Image (tube, rainbow, N blue to C red; front, side, top):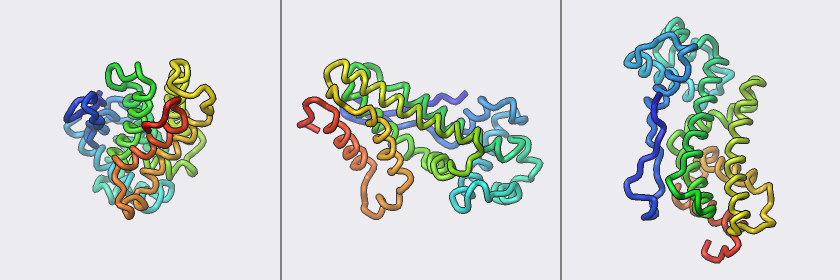
Length: 242
């Protein structure tokens, strides 16, 4: 299975935020390993490049016209693969949808539950890291997250539950940090239980409304700093520095 990990040019102690070291090839390699019951092609040197063509085509077509409107013929033409070739990787559009959603959830869980060593000892630092890591993750995998968000309303019930569970996972991770921060006396005891649910839309706005921020020349670093400042000024006991 592909190792989902971070890279950093300088250490976290020096103030640098780590970046996700994932390419489309990494994602495809991971999907291949996790879906051997669905994908009949076993040789990674063959399967990974073809799976990449399929997924790039599916995400592009969904972005332009919607996943539900995309036909297998459309996908075949866009990916340059025959319909029979597509069936070597999935047996239906719903299976393809499930593979994409499951991968997004898997990456979110893998990355956000593995902060740098020692950072969980400080709830403020952990919360800052979580906000930044989520934003940078969605930046690196923009097409995947836009797909999961924009297409959710038209997902079949089982796949809609997957999307809801993924969002609930993120909220639960934020809630756990805030709970620990209150217990340690770093966060205000009256911090609302709604805060994790309110953080999530701020994070989603970055990738759902990218054009708005491009027009305003807002960088990822500036956006992340603003979200962190808003959240910390609300919940940290001595929030003057934020």
